[in-house]
Length: 314
Image (cartoon, rainbow, N blue to C red):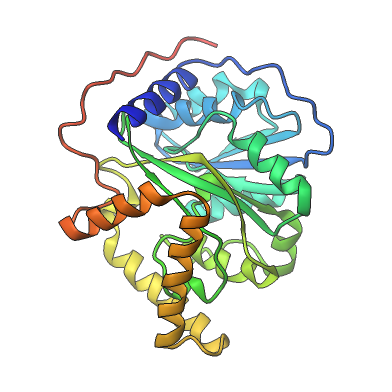
């Protein structure tokens, strides 16, 4: 497993080392996709995020960056790439969800998504997501997720299965925004991100969008979640648990039959879905992780054998 992760890491590190977008693939019937990146004082990671979007070579891409008035050099980084952006701004806002919503309000894509300013798309992500979306106009199209440290060294791959509103009350990991796009018309139907949410704004949004059906899984890694000492996952555990509890309680009040039997059935169905997707090695690793009491999202302390190339000028 480590050998495979090393290879994934090398590909990722090379992919985000400099701007070199491939020749755009034929657009055909691919949907137009809008990606929004909210940014605030994340200069340490922002350039890699931008490059991971632009290097996708997606033919019908609209890329919007909404910065909250950064003072750490982020604006200089955005300006460096502004000729490749559909729109960007830097002005005070009310937080991450507000910034993303501002981008969504400007979006014209058939599908939209957001990539946080410290996370990444893996090579080929948007092409695979867009191709899957073109086949059936699923409400949400999503993939699996790599977990990497601050130097883009991948140490875990999280596998996902389709979910519905009821499933959200059972599983902790539902749909990774780092690896998902969804139909823009559903934002008009169900509303934008709930800005009162400080952490679980994605889960709350999925709880509304999934009224239109399950998400479609593309069984390849599409996004990269970066874990570091400034991530909200590390800093806001109490907020996460409280907000998730609120969302779960709201779903249970509106969805009948979500008792203990449903929970057992849901977990069994999830294991079966992983097996159908060929995730047997992942299931074994997950079981081992649980038995040993390890954290899926924590980078191994000794994982220090790859280096990140310096970004070059555009």
